[in-house]
Image 1 (cartoon, protein in one colour):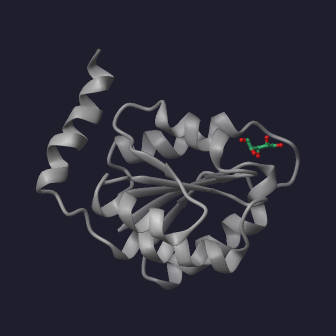
Image 2 (cartoon, rainbow, N blue to C red; image 1 turned 90 degrees about the vertical axis):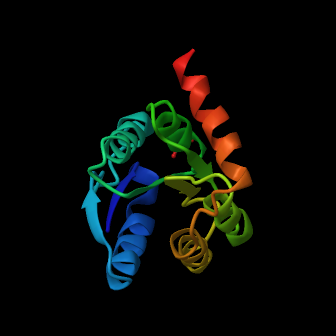
Length: 146
Ligand code: RB5
């Protein structure tokens, strides 16, 4: 399974920590950077992660900026993405089980590495439940066609 990862300058250390963590869990990472702390623009990296997931080059995406919000907005503009921005594990789990999210974002300036690992665990280790949720996910995705 492949995870596309991207981040801005505020999240290089966090990205490297989470990259190592998911690799240890057995995932292959496609790292779109940035890998320097020189100021850059989060939309560039949110879009790269979103496009990799939407194109099927990666199974999941994880994108990190200062708050997780800007890079999440950017990734969610790519047709085919379902993005969640999480600061705690419960929402991460439910976003997989109910919303079938395929991109996770969080803020390197909001949460610490250990919380980020808990969020990533809940997000990657839980499956989409389908059933009654499928109609609603279909309704969400249909919005992109109008
Ligand atoms: C960068 O300063 C900051 O705006 C960015 O990392 C992010 O928090 C935007 O949503």
